[in-house]
Image (cartoon, rainbow, N blue to C red; front, side, top):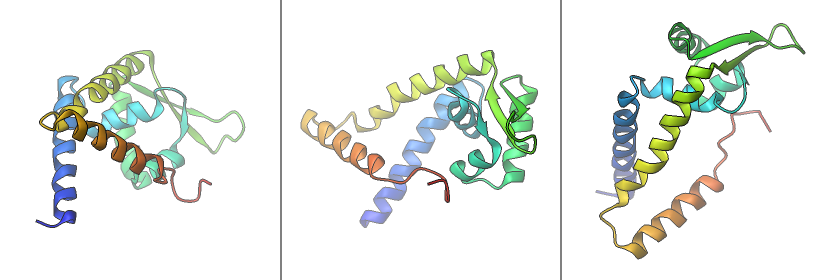
Length: 141
């Protein structure tokens, strides 16, 4: 396997672990990611679509399903009534915080078989990759 293959399988491993965590809270991975994205403050729907890499109609469907569960709510922006803001409800906030904490605790376990030096190096490398990546949606800068 080449490096690209290994990164692909690392991605599968991370996604599988995340899906397991989300299912413990009766959430899909997409619902949990949405909740975590708005857990601290409401966000514009257009911003969420871009940052989550989703088409606007797919995001709207996800929001509809999550809103029916009482976990998120939509509101019109006070500055521009054409802008829809998505926020988390109190119940959604509790769930988002729980999923986020559990994910932060359990994802590092994927490197649990490494010795202590390799674990530190893995943490350093993943931190560098994330810190130097542009995770903002296109056109937001």
